Amino acid sequence: MKLRIWIRIFCTSAVVLTIAGLLGYISVSKLKRNAQLIVEDTLPGLSMAGEANAYLADATRTLLVIVTEDPAQRLKLRGEITGLSQRTTGFLERYGGSIYSEDDRTNYEALLKERQDYIQIRDQILDLAIAGKKAEAMAAYETSMMPAHKRVKTAGDKLFEYNMRQGEARGQNILGLCTLTQITVAALSVTVFLAGFFIGLFK
Image (cartoon, rainbow, N blue to C red; front, side, top):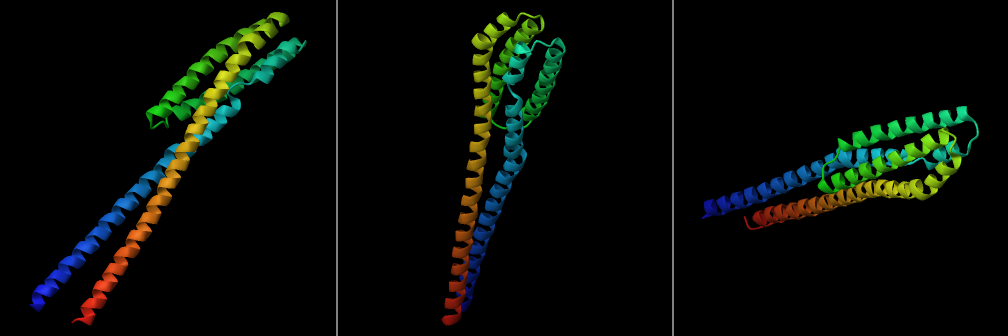
């Protein structure tokens, strides 16, 4: 009779400890996965999207090219615009290599399209300004470039906001898993303690 009781106790303890081990393994695996996504996807995504957003559409320099009367200054400003544009391209290319979801890919491709349209319009205006066609350049700046500027900035903001939401969701997921693991471990610890207590009591 005692042997059967001990066998049951052993089996029950083994089951409880196995469940605790499995839950711990699953929780740690999920925590590791979410932490990995934050490190490899969310944080780089936020950083690169933020950097790209800062240089996406430099309308101010384009306007300066239009209004300045100094040809040398116009060329200098256009060189700065080209440099910033290349820098933005670099950030966006790096961002493209860190995409893990279809929604992110959709936002990214929408931004690339808007930016391509913007650059085409901007370069046409710069050509007009450098050629001395100030009135035509200013008219195109107001009617074509500024709306394009708004569209590309909106697309850039959407990309940044997506990464913000992803970071918040993954952070909340980690907190939830930590809380669940704490409760589970505490409950199993109490169960094992009570089992040991009653076994000793009725031994």
